[in-house]
Length: 189
Image 1 (cartoon, helix red, strand yellow):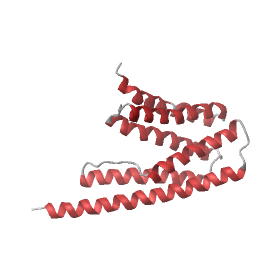
Image 2 (tube, one colour):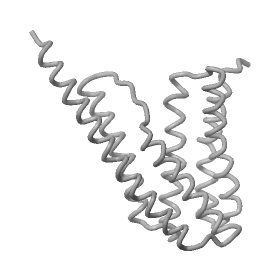
Image 3 (cartoon, helix red, strand yellow):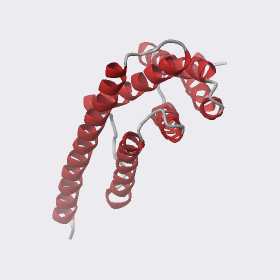
Image 4 (spheres, helix red, strand yellow):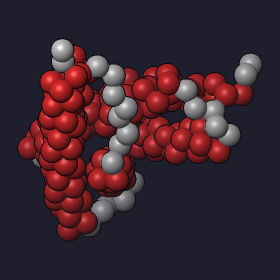
């Protein structure tokens, strides 16, 4: 086995953990949900570290890693909202942000061709805060009482950073689209 595929295998494992996370949330087995979600969260750091440290990067991994993260977070937010543990409006904002980003990237690709997508600092912060909020909520449900002000603060922090991050992506990619459109017009015969 070539060692360079290890980060991709870890990412695939994280993707496969989405189903048991969903099942354990729906069955209110939050101890298992916490364990599975924590493993998935840690695996994100491990595969990223290995890919950067040993230059084991690939186009496949660059695409699959954020997909695995977003799928895990989307399923967690949807089901924690469905079961009444997170506000529905927060899940709507988190998921809406990601859908807008994907729709924008797809539209850009269709209209202007290939692009290089790299997450912004705000985007990375948004995703990190979402992971932390889900972990705090699962800790609260499974093991220890997390203070309500901490959870409420986490909810609002995720809301604010996700909203600002979403707006930042829309503005940045709108500017890129305008530049690409102008460039395309100036190159036309």
